[in-house]
Image 1 (cartoon, one colour):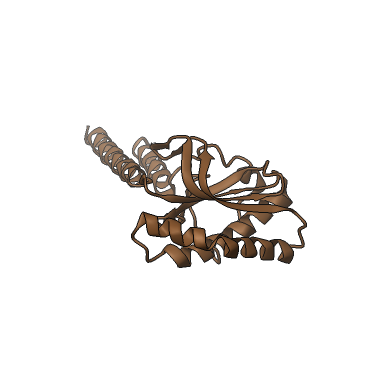
Image 2 (cartoon, rainbow, N blue to C red; image 1 turned 60 degrees about the vertical axis):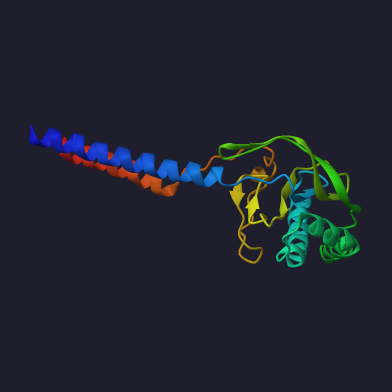
Amino acid sequence: MNKYVMMVYITMVMIGALVTIYGQQTEAQRDVVIPNEAVRLRILANSDSPEDQALKRAVRDEVNKQITTWVSDLTSFEEAKRVIAEHIPEIEQTVARVLQEKKSDQSYKVTFGRVSFPTKIYGSYVYPAGEYDAVLITLGKGEGANWWCVLFPPLCFLDFSTGEAVRPAEKRVEQKTQVEQMEEQPLVVEDEQQVEVKFFVAEVWEKLMQ
């Protein structure tokens, strides 16, 4: 009888741990909310080929790094729009430089204004489709998977195209091409700690049943 009581007790403890972990993850996801007064960055790749997607990511890294230095200390939405609008020529130069460094002859276009965005699900929060203030960079035909984030307030540490936390450019590990081509779809990743707890429960049950 003591064995079964112990089994029930351990199981209840593990279930409580899983509920706590899930609750923390859900709460963290709900905190990620884009305010109405926000400026986004959207980059459209020429196509979904590995080369074009890699070029998109190279442009993303340089432009994001550049714009972040301009808006990191700003607190006003109107000021952020003004500063970014004034620096569009510099963004164009950055895109041209990256294309030249990558030996690409693709055309490019940089605009700033109201840009159409598709619906995006990030965790438990839905970001509805609509037109938002954004810097739009179109590479070539602009028919490939896109990448976007929020420039102001600074939320570019979050990649809303995949629903993932994005590391700084110098530390980012490039994703596989298949993942890049699925950027418009929600990404579900099982937490490693949650997996470990599940395995632990299974091991405890196995040992007690011996």
